[in-house]
Image 1 (cartoon, rainbow, N blue to C red):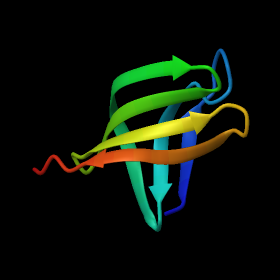
Image 2 (cartoon, one colour):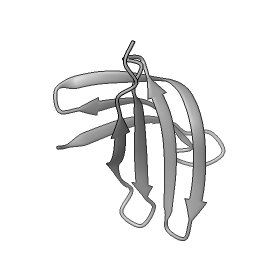
Image 3 (cartoon, rainbow, N blue to C red):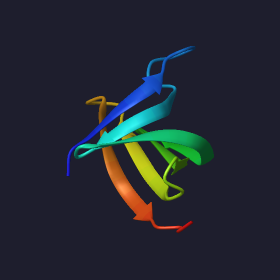
Image 4 (cartoon, one colour):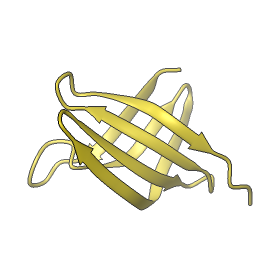
Length: 75
């Protein structure tokens, strides 16, 4: 499934995700639960406005985002 991420760019490009489009559905990031970095990538565990958790991955070499994980939290 294709993902497009709109991110905040402050100190550096794609500093953290603000919104993302997954298929045809748009989500707003309401909370960044966790983030970690490694050589050439960044991960963000976020809660979206649908209440679910998403794990977003940015490959810094290609500047491509991907959905690395999902957990339904329910309402």
